[in-house]
Every structure is written in C-alpha cells, then in structure tokens.
Image 1 (cartoon, rainbow, N blue to C red):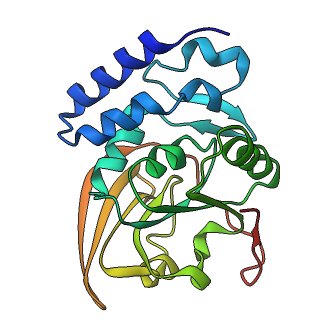
Image 2: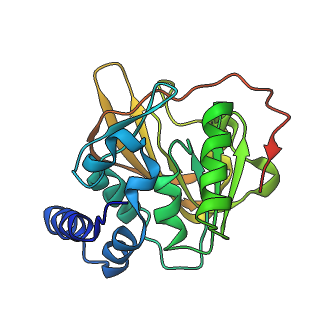
Length: 222
C-alpha cells in the first residue's frame, strides 16, 4: 500500500494557506483523515490533489479546498450536533467528525449509502457519525434541532424550509444554491426563530440535490 503521508501534508498546508484558514483544527483534520480511502483505488494516486474525483453513482468527492472552506464557514467549536445533507464519499462527514460532537449524515442513493456507511463504521470505525438513507431535502426532523447544517449538493429551489426549521437558534447553515445562473454558496445564520442573515460566500459547482424518497420514512444504519 502506498504511503501518502508527504502528499497529505503538502495538500493540508497548501489548502490552509490558500484559504487563509486560522483554525488549526481544520488543518489537523485534513492531516488525520485519509482522503485516498474515500476514492476508487484506481484514482488514489490523485487523492491529495486539490481536485474533485468521481466516486461512482454519478457523484464526486469535492476538492479538499471546498471541504475545508465549507467546514470553516460552520465556525465549529467542538460541541456541536451537525446535520450533513449528501453523504457522498463520506469524506466531508469524516472531517466534520474530527471537529464536532456528533454528525448525522443523509444520503439518498442506496448503493452509495451502503458503501460509505460500511467504510465509516466498519473500516474506519468513526464512532460519532450516524448514517441515514433518506431524502435529505426534508432533513431529519426526529433529531432536530441541529447546531449546524451543511448541504453538499446544490438546491435549485432555494433553501429548503424544512432545513431552516431544523436549525437551532444561534445555528449556522452552509448550502449551495443554484438560481439558474450558477451556484452560490450561502451562509445562513439563525438569529431568532424567524430572523436570519444570509451571506454569499462564493461561487460553487455541486451535483444537484436529489429528492424523491418517502418523506416519512428513513432508515438508520448507525
């Protein structure tokens, strides 16, 4: 098996420097989480380049810089309960797990869900991630409210009201929104029950948010 220690260190240092990230814990998370384990074996030699890579199921693993940037926007302190919409490869969830108390992550594609759940639970043995097979656009009402919500797929219908409702007062949500003229990364801060601030944090390109599962049923594979 290849040793990626050097490549991983260069990637972490480059990303943190490029984004001017001051939270040293994010760099530490990038160093601890083995990105090559989240990509197909044939692409592992490129795992520590700052690029997206295909992971099957018409999905990709995001650039390390995008993962680090979106993570920094959450302003995590360590005690948070975080909801992630779009488990994908599981890499973003694994990074979050290094920085918060508990991650609840939702994936709609069953094959990808089963593959990533097995990686996170049985191979990597990450104890503070719970994986769910469900329609992420409706969130996880039964477990709300959440201190932070991160969406790793682009919503073409604005910010889902169900997710806004599941965000705790004082909480932060980071979500890509596609309004037809390109994707924008939106940071939502919930100041009071019906009072929010919205900030555009950059332009991004994510796979679309997929809907369609029964809104009343989700399967926990924790």
